[in-house]
Image 1 (cartoon, rainbow, N blue to C red):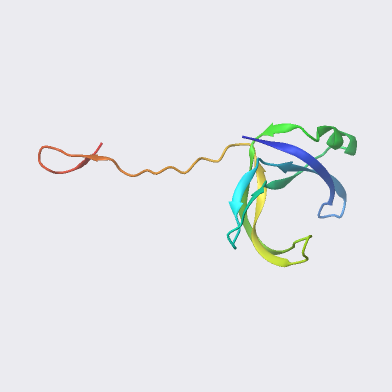
Image 2 (cartoon, rainbow, N blue to C red):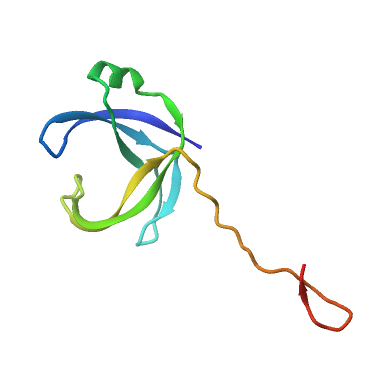
Length: 121
């Protein structure tokens, strides 16, 4: 899996000093909304950098290995820019270099024995 650098933004650190963050975007996903509508989306995450603005600009379009995953966090308020709706969220999306393991069904497979007792194969 890979992510693409799609833009950068100026952010402030805890001391109110500016720094640049790359905005990463994952691949397209098809999801179903709460009201049943299906739509395409892509997760985005922010990655802090030590780069200058020229370097950040030159990196737009670059693909990197990794993915964007959901991470639980302390609840916070989020305002939807398009509608002004204020939501309470308790998750965020973060970049990870490693692929997350796919959950598998570890159902036990049993086979019969001569005495009728099943053993795990």
